[in-house]
Length: 349
Image (tube, rainbow, N blue to C red):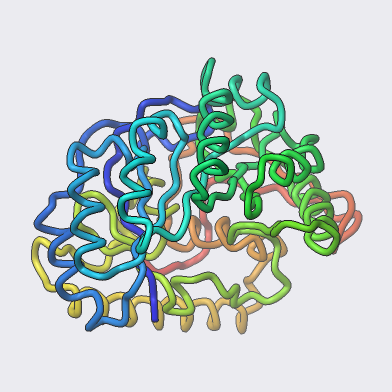
């Protein structure tokens, strides 16, 4: 069976330094008619789990009704949240505990200063309070930390904090380039990414709680096995578009719709899922061709970097200076790699 990740809204009650502008553009919420279509047709498409994201999913104007409908339709559900509204919504999760499988709190620093610097004053304490409520009410939860230059040195402390707070685990994820993250000097270099990944893999082996990384880490296998490419996950944005990736759907500059494969305002879910499968097949065939031509670079082994460039979802070089990634160690020791936000090879749109 598969899951569907639904972006309920691109509204948010925080404005984090490292977030995509589209993720808090406050331009829309998912229509309930689209949710109803998913719930009616989802199981026939092999979907049995619904995961909510945003924006901040809990500020959707019909969040309570959405949870009621998902539970009534017999789907398990989970969601990602910044924790700001948790005091108000946790009774809803208790009410629907049979179908609730877990919550992921965004926590971008093991200490208050680091997290609040990225997400806003007072947000760290809201997450701590939310985690405490989960422990008392026996609600399963995990943490997610986006790796930046600000929190890179707190990986060990984050794992220890997650264990101390009673979390089921902690997941780390790489930051995707935006003009804001470049100007704010938040991005790790390729070598820094290699180093932090090695540290995380060590903790994965030794920690008593689950420790892992979100898709996007360096993979020797060019056919990186992320959920959408394995047809284990579909993604739906708040406009009703089925998309290749929940990350890409918020990464909207030039060629912003390149990852959309079907809009549920126009087609039914089974048609959109079939278009999705065809798009994945095209994606894999195109990657195979690039590999055979010898055009697959060292940096393309960071899958999210490859996908953004493949789909040409890149900010214009006129908007800000391109970053330079210099690699002096790691798989290609001594080789300098200069990377620009301009894809210079033929790629599918």
